[in-house]
Image 1 (cartoon, helix red, strand yellow):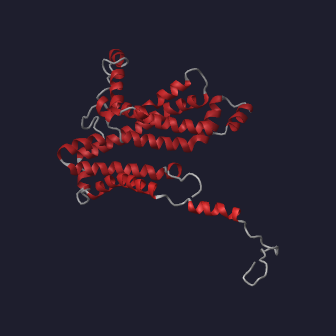
Image 2 (tube, rainbow, N blue to C red):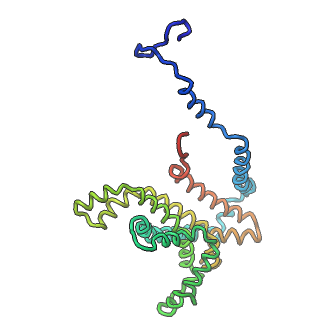
Image 3 (cartoon, one colour):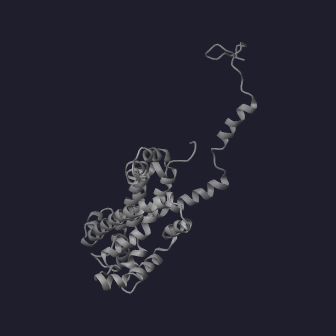
Length: 294
């Protein structure tokens, strides 16, 4: 009833029906579920501070006035150039090799597929130093394959710029493979089947239908792969060494600078932090979008 005692009507002139308590209950439940209980809010706040405070400390202690001079140092510029070059090359190699591998994992059916998928994802959880040691045992001068490359072609991969690219590819490619494989599994197969029915070859279907469908995920995987390669340290220093101008990338230059003068190390770390923030900004719609209703 309205305050005047007349029955309330809706805009169409029909009597409005009051919601029953059982109908109003869900709205109260939803509104009451938005707040976090203290038992969860307190550790959540501590966890957030634990992740944020080291980054703030880096920004607070940064030598902002001398930053241009520190970053224009020839050693820093060489390490930055080498890092960008090797990370980009590792991403390119990962795309060329990783996209077909993701397609095989997503679409092919053969015995041992689960084991193959597990092996592909091992570098994601393997300590990078162990990955570098494995590369050394495989492609080192006395390694399983490296000895033949050295004997037949005179090709030595460890402790070279090519070794940096190999180490970064080893640790970064699984990020691209996992991302693209998920996109291939969820892609609409009807379009591919329709194209095949109309006479398109498998290669045409892959290049004209499949790749455009997974392009957003491919770009996201490539950005993740590039960021992981840019920050790689353990596998690089184990397999490629730490030679300025040849194998010393930004993380290795940070490690070297930290032994003598922290300010150049902080300046170089800011560059890596900026790269990480840029990657997050590029992937915010894909990885940072809240799941479910706001």
